[in-house]
Image 1 (cartoon, rainbow, N blue to C red):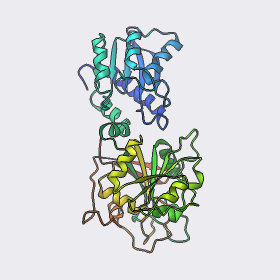
Image 2: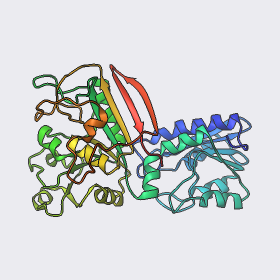
Image 3: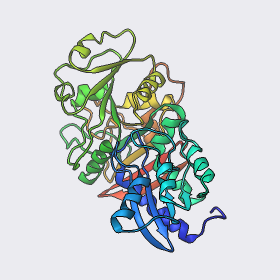
Image 4: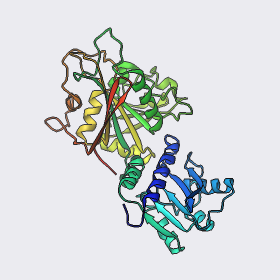
Length: 388
């Protein structure tokens, strides 16, 4: 904890992090931000960035002060990200803080973007405002809250999250004739929520040919539909696929190799990226403003991303069942192409079917942190490989 902050400050910072969650899935490519205005222990106003183009958290909290009949002059504002000093979809927040007479600003995390980093706090200090930054648990939580924003700001690339589902014995496909799902309904509902929170969702052409998926977020009130991305080197995506027949729901972007004839896909309404490798494709997605990519399969695509060390986080569901021999299918559904040969675990399933360009031997990423929780009857293991 910073020597400038006390336990009361920490409690208010935890509150702004709770408030910031209210914008999840609604504000990208902007960050999640919450703010609280406090004077003499009394909360005068609260706010968060609720929708892209809407009020930033600081202005929302000041507006809440007005709605409650309070005067923020001389108060402290707690905010999860340093206030902006540039004009974007909204005017600079530092102007609103200075005009309101805020005396102290406590910030949970810095903004790493080039247009913002350090400018807001500097302007506030020049205006006579006491500025303090958090340290410790609250600062870490604030950074983790906005990993996709932070990675995109620092590298221009989207944060890549891989989803896997498997049985206790490491199988990721059920035997022919069984239910196609390994995981339970609670886990599948959570995956739809993750889709709604992501800028884009990606699969390989093998998954599309096997499953003809929609790749939409369903049963989520007010869900923003993600961009649907298919990695398809030879441009084989069927023109009668569900993806191309639902372009009114969400766009479809196909990543093809330079030699592929993608003109039929373009004529069918798909956007096309021509890329030599995963790195080039991710750079193109980043230039399009995609800050988060949710990777759902299939196995060749997963191993390609692993070989490129392009996976930031993995979310692995383990269902309490034994399936025996079955080929891996990271989407969590049965693979109709399965022909036996069980796998030993997550790393092995990622390493199988690696493309010719992959390095010899199983590629590995070591987790910086890992959490385990129960979702229905399943176990969810979240492994973070990189922090931004």
